[in-house]
Image 1 (spheres, one colour):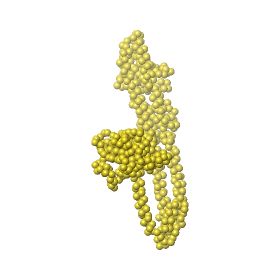
Image 2: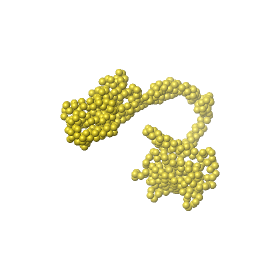
Image 3: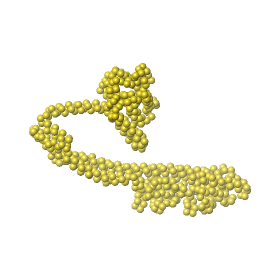
Length: 597
């Protein structure tokens, strides 16, 4: 036998064929995840910067609108019409000055409000910071003189923000001509605009700055690349998000947004390593620990296969060859440490003398096993319900709705815990109702507003012993067939469960389950009420038949289960059972004892 055709070679090759693609896939997923994280964070930064800048633009626009509204101020009309020194003229200036003081403190971005009158060639202004008030006044007077000497009065349709330097502080200034030699204006400190950039986490290797369209720096910044004009021009040219902008060998990610009101670009600069600061551990896992673990796992896997499979398999192959040659006297050593190969070796040792009988026994055993497995699966977890529940948990986790994940996981755990105890003959009605509530809560999280339920159980009935899962199959059948077969009408699918004393027989309790679905088909309703077993085509209703059979075994001829359709539509299941039954009492001690807790 050639080595490349051997089982040993193929097992190792198969293991490597599974392991290496997984390692490569994990590496790819890691790189893809890093790229997605980077794009998501930068997109979030860009969106947040755009929103905050839009807010500032609205405030700046409001500042100019405020200036234009001064045209309708009565005190301004007095200043325009009266002469300096007149009492009304001076009172009007005082009132305007008081208003400016109040408004400049109310406007979050406004640093200074001023009013220039050509009559007095003077400024009436209010500022939030008075330490450089004189310098502001001189700079504003120069600016007004330049504006007046350079061109005609600026009209309202040409309102705009320009830069004004006062000492070492950069301002944005907007002026509006109000006629009759009166000009109103507002100052906004560029440093005040830049403060919002400080809310962004750009890391120790990042920074932020403001610049105009020519690349001139308009704010203070201790970020080293800002000193490079080429870097600034490249940064402001990349509107939005730009990757891989280099400066002195370092690659940066730049997020830039331009103001709609002023010639000002707001720029954030960060590094890829900072955006992915929480991922280095995973990178180390992918590039070092996973390959190392794969190599160690391969070595352990080969040693394990040699001991538990290759050596016993070689002996078995040799024995099979002798059997093929007609030597039925061959016997294989039985290794007590390897249960599987011990069984195979023992079976092989008996094969020569019992081969025909063994085939028959194995065939019959397989049939019995399949039958037992089929019956066992009838009472196991609905795989669709199980997978749907896991899908809901996955989707909630992807949305980071961890509270709903906890809630659904708790309901699912309680649901399965009851199933694990469903081998008991009887349980309390309150336990059955609690189990149904967990099931409906899980379904409600799946269908949200499309499913509603109401449970009204008399507290006096909660301790009544019932067969486990006596109502749950009907509830599940109602959700599957009633909800699935119901035509959409805008109303949610509704299930109502209630208990009451049977007015016709005080010793009986009546449990009713009703829904507003399409109801039972006529043929199914006839089969249910006749008590006949379902055929192979009705395997999905085998749970209902199982309930009917267990009910008859537990309660004998007492009570019963009936099915009908409500006059207004919808299926109705009515379970009548005794509050106390001689048939049930003999099971209560075992069902409600310590083992059932």
